[in-house]
Amino acid sequence: MMLRDKVVVVTGAGGGIGREIALAMAAEGARVVVNDIGASVGGQGHDAGPARRVVDEIRAAGGQAVANTDSVSDGASAARIVGTAIDAWGRVDVVVNNAGILRDRYFHKMSAEEFDSVIQVHLYGSFHVSRAAAPHFKEQESGCYIHMTSTSGLVGNFGQANYAAAKLGIAAMSKSIALDMHKFNVRSNCISPFAWSRMIGSIPTETPEEQARVERLKQMTPAKIAPLAVCLASDDAKDVTGQIFAVRNNEIFLMSQPRPLRSVQRGEGWTPQSVAAHALPALKASFYALDRSADVFCWDPV
Image (cartoon, rainbow, N blue to C red):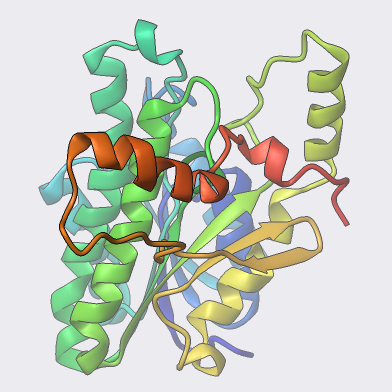
């Protein structure tokens, strides 16, 4: 068992990708804190049922798990999530930041509340839970973070400025954690999952192209994400940190990170006029198009 005796916290584990990761972690010997507030996709409501049902599944299969229904979006509440692991098993080894909500809206119509609520759950939530675990990781000189990012932020998508901003922020935060905590043998990586779940169940299907896209997505089940998450949590991935992966059905991608592509220079310096006449034309061949995730990942899932 790759995760024998490791203690794993999985947020948003009451359904979808989080549930599959929690079940897979437990199947590999991990003791799992199943966190989920039981809210709707938009973040409304509270129900202890989803977390408890996943715990029951794990225990029925012979594994060890406890439920937690605290919110990730508040620092004190997030600390209780990690505290559940400490109270139950005396340590924490892995944090999977998976909890999230959606409030999709085209940017010119998006309210401050819609933007803020998504940032609070995704970005602040990932920070709060990660920060609560950090002192334990530092003291035991080991630990692993796995954060969920998205091609909505890494590439782009319509109507998701709030979600994209949060998910790209998570990728940057993960890299900073990897740099800051490397000396304590703490690792931090991201997964960008392609999977059909209630989080993307609201994708429009008004045109044949949209309908075909949704049918492709339905092939990509949440269970396909779990093997990579389990491996990254294990000691077999002890040298893997600061990376961004994507999983698309049976495909695993290593995603690029921003690096210089091309440069221009003038010994006498630049003026606005020379930027327009020289720099922009010289760099234009390397400009990125207004691609969306579906434009980049345009082939059928393997």
